[in-house]
Image (cartoon, rainbow, N blue to C red; front, side):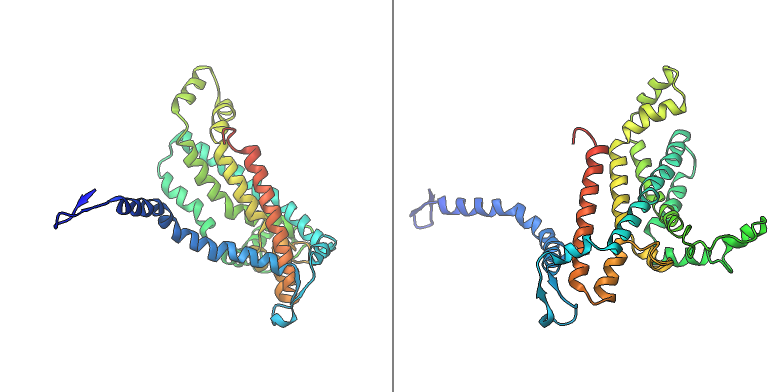
Length: 309
């Protein structure tokens, strides 16, 4: 009970209960901005894409939208173009996922073990391609690999290779070349993540391995790789996402050519939705691409992640 200035006693229970209610809402108030942003830019577009994928719509006038259920998904799964794009994405996985991880972990291990000077400048230089726009990377590499005036073919001709390949226009070389460009753009990110993970491995483990007579390779397999289990899972999952949603580099280098040798799901989705005015069909491809990406990422995190979760 509380006593007022006139000597009248008043109950404090409503005041305390209102304070408790405000206190219980306080965590949600902190989460509210993030929830609003997630709802506006993730949840609503995702639900809208799923709804759109169930329609036959030209992407121009809503009056032309017609509900057709799962027909778009049936059409995509039975389409040879979709299967070809999906296979091309799978063929890019070794280049976009595994190769950058190998290219990143080797210099990271050497820099950590040898304690090289100027490591921060080296780290910044390697990470730079990862933060460059994919369109810019594609334009630059298209110029470098130009069969007429590109420096790569000029260098190869100076070494006696009379007719170097038309890298981005050859049916055999186009897809591996795009994959190598993607690997070059991603390995700096892998290097930075692995180097950060190496710093958290206790030095006592390396010292114990050396006392047991372990060499560099034994240290790498017995100490480094188990210590980087979590980082490997993160790197592989992010690289897999980049491999499945690859678009900008391919668009600016080959545009899916020659023929459909470098046609991938993201490019096929954009061409269907905007090039052919089949927005509903393009949305269905986007949903399928999201499902494949989600399942692949979960499998990698399950297999390569920490066993303790």
